[in-house]
View (cartoon, rainbow, N blue to C red):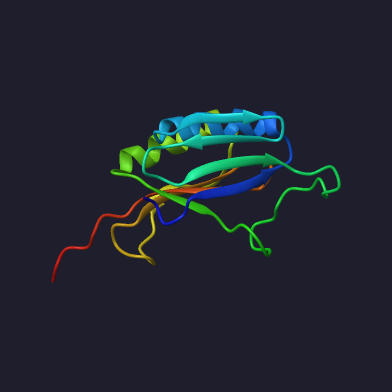
Length: 136
């Protein structure tokens, strides 16, 4: 059982959100769950459910800005650098904006390879391959 039961996030437009999230989440092994008028979910056995909601009518229709209070980013651990590259390209094809192209981040450690993307509502994802360090 996952420590986190579900993760809910709000987007400006649910239809556009589905266009952007669905290809990425299915590539990560998630399947489309419930689709309701104001929410869409994706499930992966043994993992945290992801639920996307459209903003409420009274909410300000402005994208989240990275670095402000609230969402920072969600990092998906991948098995290889090639998978980071593949998910990054897939997200870009689905309309996500490049934040940082795939590369090594030696400030974290010598094997930390990651890429960052952001969708139209300002939600940022990281695709990361961070293998365990060699025992010294």
